[in-house]
Length: 288
Image (cartoon, rainbow, N blue to C red; front, side, top):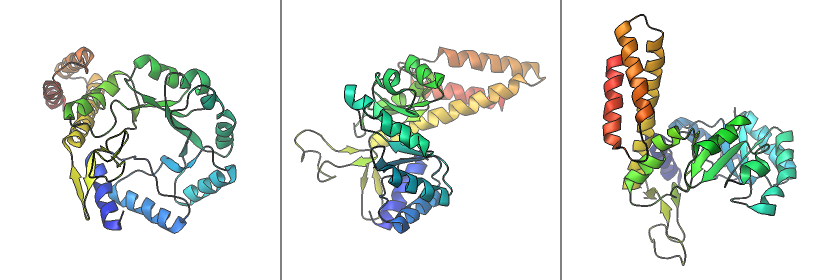
């Protein structure tokens, strides 16, 4: 990426509600990495916590320690290092010593995986990027040990269906008590990023397509943004419900009770999301 391209894409991420994306910039050039962090910050991205990919949990512990020092110098207190992607069985459990070492130097661990991650690694894995349909009972397990869970591969990026992204990465996450999403990917080309047919197995995973100085959004990406916006309306309504509960205004309190009851009736799998948002906005206006 050129600096012009990167700046445009960072702004595009923030404009679509993504303010804590993972970072792939390598650690072999600290000057360039610092510049990248500064560009992220200037675009409105939150660098702390930092979800860092180039140095995985299998890296030399001295390198991980060195990166932690670098992060601290740049105002970052919390760094997540990535484990072995989608590991299962013995390959998953074999990471325990490495993850313990990461914790010893103050780092945290995140990785994509499945149901077996909790019983085998839940005590060490600080953030689980859970594949497929989000499930409330899965979230409860991770939260019970003070850890977090994101949604992943439901589906991957690039499917030309905006509603599925709005639904699956919006209110469905809230209803299942998930902490966020780690969708793959904002941009990933299996060959030429403009050619979906140049790989024997996969099509490109793109929410957006790059140009020399900007970004071309897809309808899938706009659907994803709508999901984020649904959560924002929901959050605002929940804040107003809580505030009204402390009010002496009886009418306001009654409206808050109705709004709270309405939220319990939402079916994020089936409801018309435009109608749900309109209803939330109506309650927001009454309570504000």
